Image (cartoon, rainbow, N blue to C red; front, side, top):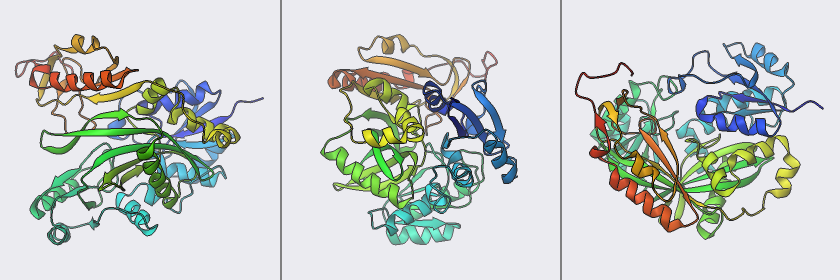
Length: 423
């Protein structure tokens, strides 16, 4: 019997864990690249040796559909945010399980997304679609208070501005309008939304035939640093169920229904404002930062294996959709926040981190000899630390110790002009 074949759209290095999970389940893989050019955020080496084929879409949809169909694929899955809409196109054309193209833009465009959720009767933020600075000035004056201005189609905190005055909002719009987004596409307008005060949660789900499973819930904490008001610094893995988690899940499921998500993974960001869930945004793909991989290590199951189950074993998915999770470890994913810029000489406190009782993993994004930037979004964290332990208190203690160690003294810089040649 031939193995199932799965086409993953825009599978790059950051989403390799999903490809690996399908391979472990016995699937063969085809990679589809939705754009001829690799987006800037993903430039760098990525391994194609595990794929039957690498199909690059160059504008001829019929040719691309035919090339994918030639492999008799059983499923088309988004590898990341940039591949969401093309996944909808391919899966619909091939007659495979699909979220369809009717609401594709609502699953990518942050303004259309919130309006679709509002139309379903759910609580969302007040917002304004912005194509010129004057519109934003007038709207901010009318709304008052703090607002958030961000690109319509991006991710990872790219281009997000927190603005207390209409003039700051107008300047933020000009900055966005004159920039490309994270995926190397020109920003075509922006969205402004009222600032939501409340703890933010990430609800990661997988769906099949319109039935949804919460795979993990993460609670975020934030700091004000480097001119960013709400910079995410740590996310904590919560128990999947409980009164709060069930409230978040109920709201997230309604959001997914409003956006037409019937198949596959989704990442729903929600703030709890005055005790009520309010949508921040949704990604109709697997959660980033490799968080599902660490959730799987901590709890034995995550969005990774549930995504495979939904596409390859749907009957088993439906039979197990309400199964509880086994008891697992507590987990925190901590991003270190550089307050300095320059050529990095080294990190003097890494050994102290590795010696922590709950230390599980260390990911160094900026190596000695490379240029270190101040941390302002998801692309500029120099180091990520994963903590995992059976004691929640131990994880919380070590996370707080990390924040104590982090600061100017954590980063040694070379003198100006001194570099070993790496960039």
